[in-house]
Amino acid sequence: MIQFTRLISAAGRLREFNFRQFNKDNPASSGFSVDVVDDRGERIMFSMAREEKGWKIPGRKIPDWILSKEKMLGETIEEVTSIVRREA
Image 1: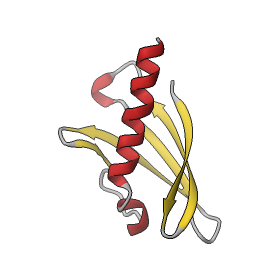
Image 2: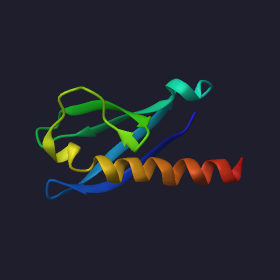
Image 3: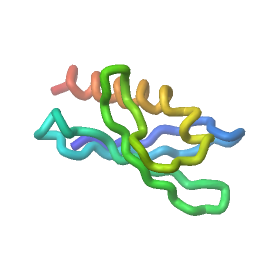
Image 4: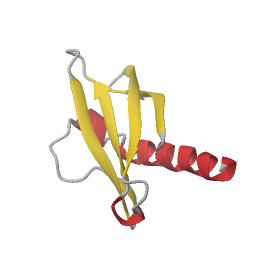
């Protein structure tokens, strides 16, 4: 299982995004759970799934400041997973 944290600027603040891979043994349903704290200190949890055009946040209502970083979050997942594959 891959777990990592990245600091990413979102909505004018530097925020800590925590990533955790799930279903590593089944690539067809593998993805990442992600969590981040909002301005009120409440943790927002969502998942990211790999699709044809990259990593996407499926279905759930997510604040716009997170959705605006969807591409960057997906690129971060790709960067870290490629490093892990090279080191394996």
